[in-house]
Length: 165
Image 1 (cartoon, one colour):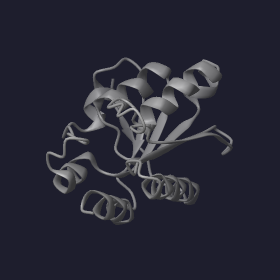
Image 2 (image 1 turned 45 degrees about the horizontal axis):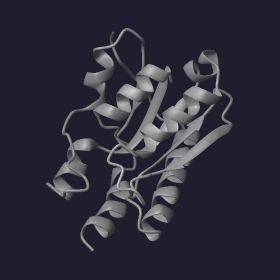
Image 3 (image 1 turned 180 degrees about the vertical axis):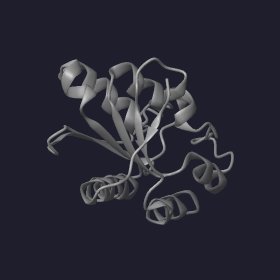
Image 4 (image 1 turned 60 degrees about the vertical axis):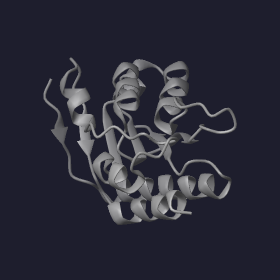
């Protein structure tokens, strides 16, 4: 199914910056600096989630995947179809797949997966896949709108401080 690429609104930038705030708070607590939020079609924030790698070293504890698991249990399909997931970094293949399966119709992301991979290299806690999320969505049967990367330098700053410390 073709992926559509939307234009960011002022609200998109506000919500994306909120993911950066959550990711920064996570990093201050020793967690990987990733975050995601779910916003309904009317602009109401439904859920927020930081990375969940710690304390158990859960390699699947990505903020987006955890958020989608929670959202899929909490909201009806029609709410999710009209919702937007905002994420501090482009979702990996696992997280994009989780978003697809839950049925969220729109995503706005900050830092690109390719740039994140350049920054983290082969760090054992973040073996980044350089697989753009649009390839995951294009393989599906449901339409997904993507906006990003946005405010990428702001997102990169979180990771430069974390992975290089």
